[in-house]
Image (cartoon, rainbow, N blue to C red; front, top):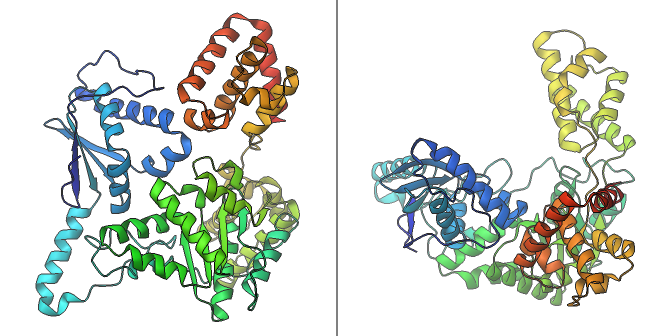
Length: 509
């Protein structure tokens, strides 16, 4: 692998290599030409199949194809951190898939969108400023709170502190503004007690909150950080993305020791979206940090979208440490809590737009119709405000229905867990779950094991390697064989097809 400058790096290999478990989508190897965009779509599909939905979305969701010139496929991402991470961990895979789909491609070049313009602008400012420009400007921060990874051309020696400045806190996300209901009362109580705890042994360490998107875990995490800071505690609030960027930047700048010392010298560490932690060395550092803080009697608060046991991509020792504290699930919002959140959002908007009036029947309709999460409720209020201010007419049930139509979704199916699949299949075929996970190869065990693997693939977003690990540490090719075997069999055996459809309904109800 060869890395060029910060704006683009080129990766080249002598030839394409097959990737296990990914079917050839264009085995004919036709020259892509005008079909380059279609080839790129197939490359992304290969990556999604191989790596799984979670990893693909985290690292490749914002990767775009800019074009093909002289055998070089130019790809771009919005930040230097993403560029560095993909180059270090996935460049060979991207090239292998690209060459399989489009033989014209000999190399892939990764760049940062807008990097050339930024660097030129920076050079102009430095030239204009003269010798006094040696003091760097503060990094730009986006709305979500992460310091922009591409704000500086390259991590600098001695920048260890800047690399762990933490994500800025939103002043609106406090305990006072958090709406409490049955679904989040325990999480709120635990978070508030931790934030206001003075001295002594930490109460629950670590506190681990998990919930789906938009159910308030980030609000609670920031509220903990706000309250602890008000009480004079040394607090760092980080997203997993920011933690990874800080660690990689510290390694590049040779300030890893300063990075570790600063993390271990705080009173409270708040980590959000821990499910996105990737990379063996980063996970090891995260595990060492957790152990050091807990052993020193410092508090840790962690949030993710699922419980520790389901973070298959995370090191087992880290999962065990996270599960050793207080694990609290924040459930979907109930009717009463949705109404309370809506009332608070409407009151906040009304303080800025006094003429904004939402009749009680409309509030009740919106709370009843939008059952997904708090962010969709925010979107509903914004749509109602836009209608009221742009048309100048009063809000009615009819106009409200039209305004929020795109937010009203059918209820999402139940999220199926691999453990539930294994238990149901084992019970159905009169074997134990331990048999399914074992090395036994008798017909009475092999068939239910293959059915469980097939259901795990079609009913969950887990990748083949992840499924294999959950079935006794098997290789992903074993899972792929089982999936193909069951797919072929159900096409020929109506009885088995009906049996598997019944299992699907039982798992999803």
